[in-house]
Image 1 (cartoon, rainbow, N blue to C red):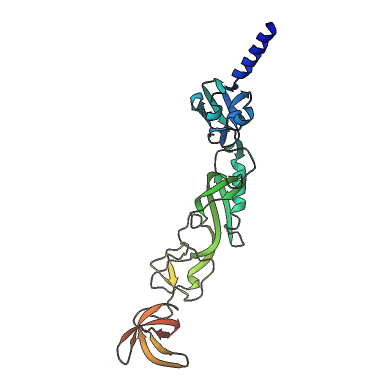
Image 2 (image 1 turned 60 degrees about the horizontal axis):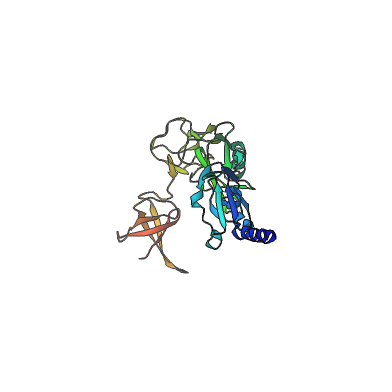
Length: 312
C-alpha cells in the first residue's frame, strides 16, 4: 500500500508542475528590445521559449523604464502551465557607451575637410563649443560617425554641424549637433579710399589685404579686378571689404550705345545699325532701337557692340 501511495504522489507532482517566471527588481539590457529572459529567472519546461520572448521596447541608451508584471502576456497555449512571481515592477536600464565630444569634433573636422577652404590666400579654423568632458551616450556596439545635412550656405562664422552615429548597418541612428565657429582669414580686395557711385572702379582704388571674413556678408573679391571690369553700386568707404554687394560686372553695352543688330540663320544674316535702349552684359537680353525705322525690339548681347535680334 505504501508503494502505491508514493507512485500516485509523484505522478501528481509532475502533473501540476509549472514553469516559474521570477521577475527581478531591476535589470540591464543592451539592445532596443526587452526579452523576458533579460528581466527574469525562468525555470521549467518552457524556459527556452520564454527566454527569448519579446515583452517590450527598451528606453533610449543611458535611460531607464519600468515594466509592470501585469503587462507581461504569456502565450495562451502555455499560459496555464506558467506562474509569474517576483517584483511587481521591474526597472530596466538601457546600457550605454560614451563617445567623448572631443572625438566627435575630431571626426567633424575630418568630414568637413573637403568643404573648408585652405590655401595660400585663405585659412580656415574650426573652433568647437562644448563643455570639457562632455560625452554622447549611444547603445553598445560598433558605430560609424557620418555628416548630416548642413543648412549653412557658407561654412564660415557661427555654424551648426550635424553628425549621425550609425549602428547596426544603419538600423540605429543617434543624431547630435555640434556648435562651432569657423574662422576664415583671407587675402581679399579692400577699398583703399572712398569710392563714389560715379567713380571708375579702377585697381588704384583698391588694395589686397589679409582680413578676418568669418562674419562677412556677401562674396568677396579674391583677386584684383581688371580695369573697368566692374561698376560701383552705391558708395564704398575706405577700408570696406569689396563684395558682390558693392559691385556688379560692368555692362559691355551702355544705354544709347550704337550697336550692330543681326538677324537671320546660317549663312544668310542681315546686319543693321541700332541703338541700345538698356544696358547689359554678354548673354543679357536688352531693348534695342532700329535707327532707320525707330522700331524697338529685343536682342541678345552676343559680344561687345553686337546684338542678335530675338524673333517672337
